Image 1 (cartoon, one colour):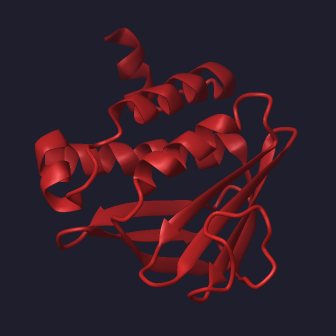
Image 2: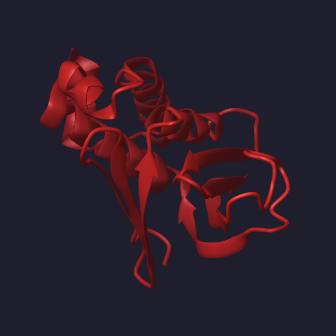
Amino acid sequence: MAGDLQFSWELGGAGWATCRIADGGSEHRVHVGYCTDALADLLYAVTGLYGGTTEQRVSFDLEPVEMRWVLRRQELDVSIAVYWFPDGATSWGSSDETGGTLSWSSAQPRSVLGHKVVEAAETVLREHGEDGYLEKWVRHPFPVAALQDLRRLHRRDDGCRHERCRKDLEQ
């Protein structure tokens, strides 16, 4: 359901995180591995929806399978499709969903998606800090620049009035 979006990114043991996305009708939850810079890739993909690009793809390693998000912007809304690829079903990160199974989908306002992803990344940073993130995620540092870029575009283009976004403007 549009506007009922929930999103979380929670670090678990060394090198994995739980990614959860849900709307009023359904939920998708997976354990993402550290073989890719998954949180940074997601932040950059959502950031790309604020420019001229109408489609963004991001792949997560689920060891040994792949989960791929396909984000398609239509005006100020985004269709989100999450595909599951068994090991060897496709070329990693390709632009072809043949061989994948649609696991979850929703249509959401871009402003809602942008805000929820910013909030989730900020929660991770607040809970773990940059050093704690690197200690848990192991291969990649916390994506500070990616978060800053998305937050800036979300405030500018969506006019976010959330207290945390306003407070960040004052700093």
